[in-house]
Image (cartoon, rainbow, N blue to C red):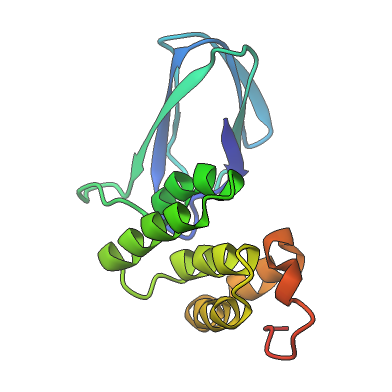
Length: 163
């Protein structure tokens, strides 16, 4: 339900509200089984957190941001919106969503990375390599992600692939 992660890079505090079903949250190694109406608040951005559904009908609302700042949609939200299209092979639709993200967040390394994945899966090797290298130039962590990301397997043998 919630991928295991920290918010250390962004400095976000997060709150997760169980809307329906039953969900097991793990925060800093501590497990909490929650029912509808219960929530978890993670103040410390460095704490690792994640959640798994314990029932088929589980739904969670996640809200987060930096203390004292208005909410801003993160680049990852565009990736989440594009993901179902990508999994279904609807590359044009995934591209559209990610390009909307680039309009809102020009030069975002995360969105460029996700676009590189779309293009690699769609067989557009040149575009994929260009986008991937732009992503890595903007955020070194994307070089590491690219080494094992199966979406990029079709371009990994190219000498222009960032090692």
